[in-house]
Length: 327
Length: 301
Image 1: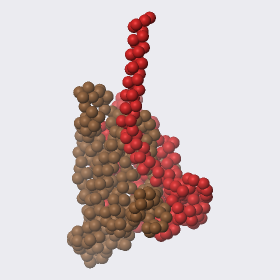
Image 2 (image 1 turned 180 degrees about the vertical axis):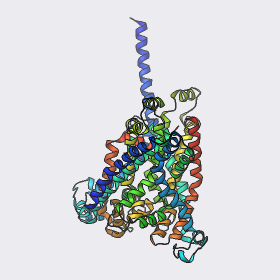
Image 3 (image 1 turned 90 degrees about the horizontal axis):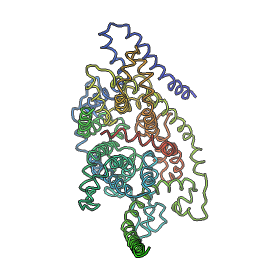
């Protein structure tokens, strides 16, 4: 009951407080001398957002770097227990973390390739049929579903019973039709189970890339395609030589997003296997170290994850700056 | 009448024959295309459908035969899984907590983001570009990079393990993206409107509340849906800050049941269906806003 009251107070109160902040603050600022007014006002307006971002992102990032350089549980500040690089040493020498790193690289390559590739292929295919919007809804359906629900959905698809018994998992039942032995999809390490998890990730992501690629596919003028057809190009040549190059900017945008998603992958692995049978990725490794209070090690894993994302971050900033020049 | 007409008729008859054959050939040629699309659609729909069907079966049925056997009589549909899941004490309360986390967190971050976006869109100040580039960079920072210090902050201010902590955390993590998106939208509004309001003596408070906010409603509406579902579906933030608390949201409770139930997790289908009912309803009824919210963030130009 208390929680309900707190929530209602927050929903009503926060906008009211901000309203008061804006109106009250402007009252004060308008009475200031002109130059001071012009100098202060923007900071006054940007303060809540910038403050939140600073407290919950910028400061914690710096602090995480610091913690990663201390001892493995981030304890004993009084005696200055610094373990410079011992946590990184752990990261790059322990088989557990190295396997997580290997799996994350697999996610980066295969998840990104298939999420973008299938999105592109499906967008081009459904563009040619009359039931396009229906097909798109079908492919997009997993996007709004949470990774938790998607994981339960696929636990049923991957369900495994010993050979000779009735298979209740859809995939193993299909294998049974072709007289094959059932596969323990989530246990068979390290290739099959990681591939299975990556596939679930792709399944949830293709709708996203398809919708975006399809939007820019529609923007290609039919005259360009018509010209190519008159020049005698067949459909495959048109897709390969005309459509794909024109879609390339969009593909790189979607690709960057997918690379970032791949590195951040957490939910699916956590729910489906919790890293068992050699399926850990960097993000789940960080979390499991954190939940056993190995803060120094967890921070080091977090920093490695961040460093892996930095190139993509720079790509995003570059693209933003290019867009700004065109504004 | 005559020869001319007859020939035309004959020609057209021939033409019709050819076009029929052509058409048939064309259709046969396109058969693989339809086949591929239908198979892909099946892979993307059948798993969800199978689980929804399973949620209406008894646990014995689930253990003894796949969901597809239910399609033939005797169906044996039952609400037993739903009763069983809702009888677990923490499940109904966790649904309530999910609501109590999601709504305030959405409201808090979007009000703050709109105000910040206005400053970045319509005010000039030293450091504006630098601040904004930092915000663009923060959009992709993995939250694992911040979890431990934020946990320490919550312990320090005494909100650790409360619902307030996840409101704050979600707001902090969501703001960069929202400020970015709303600033682009606000910046695209016609300059003349703001200038003429300024000439009429309207201060920034009036320009923001009377002009900027009403004109941004379409963008905010898309964002509300997007942010709301993001928090409703979130696992990591809730797990990190409420993982062992009384106020665990639905996703965390489901995950806990999946890992703790071992062999008997099958009836959790009902929980998963309840969890995804809201996002699916939003997607079906507000499809346009939903897709707009998802596409506007990633592609511009």
